Image (cartoon, rainbow, N blue to C red; front, side):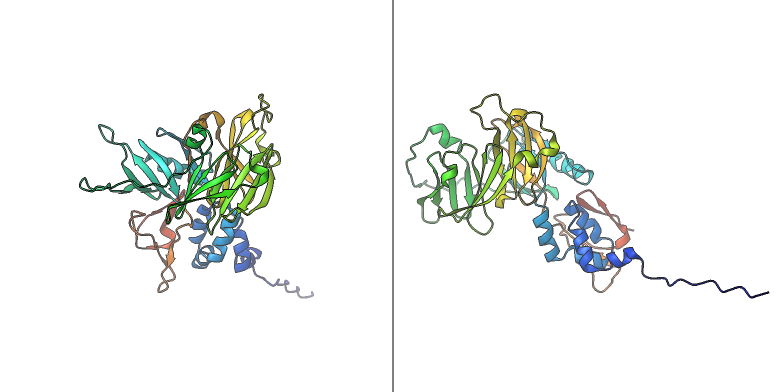
Length: 375
């Protein structure tokens, strides 16, 4: 009887998943395709290597270019808020943040910090302001009023605008650094240099001089952005602040909103613009616009043309609107180099209820906030 042949042994190669996730360059490309910064923080808790990759400034810059700030809610006048539909990892966080804003009017939102007018006294108080942080809403930083013994006098430069009073009262106004801008119906933006108390004008592009759907925003480095609606197209302009404008993008609203199943595009009143610009975010990261005929309010990220429905148009008429957006950059744990199994949450106690060392496997993430469970 012939001896049995020895079974062939297969060479065990590296696991394909390990080959992909063990490659820093491929891992970075995967991270860039995540939908929300919340997932970046969760990924960072998998391992110390993933933490370093997720918090890499280069990865964060590329992620930000693909995923601009997302809107958590729209704050309206008279202490009203509209929560924007969100995935589960953001919806609960938005509810918690909004619950702290009862009887407070949001006057501005800058990267997770809200300027609020507080009206929580009995009897009600007015002209009382505070700065509130989304990550720790229980701790306000009050903005003190001048003492009663302080006296002052008002000095202001004056110029004449040959336009209707209501156009001036309702005009869009913007403060960028030491310069104050106001849109006019006269074909230019009126500017006031606060440092020199002098006026100047910025001529609008010829194509938008008579536009009634025009909004503008400040640019991070310098200059201004303009966005206007020409029928069913959005036109995005960048200006240098002295009157030179460049058309940087033209976007078809119908194509971008194809997934929303808009029931009606043409307004009954042919003299009404079909698309109304509501707001342009800082650095033109996103624009909020109203599809007038269907009263659908949408938010479009101008970088990637992603459109989301955020509200019904009838809710925004004659409202003081402010979007409440996510914090950027995400707050990551920091690796304790002396112990590869330990992370230190490098988040000051004013932001979270706990700051200290903890085992990696005892960190629990709940929606957009970090909660710590100590052994």
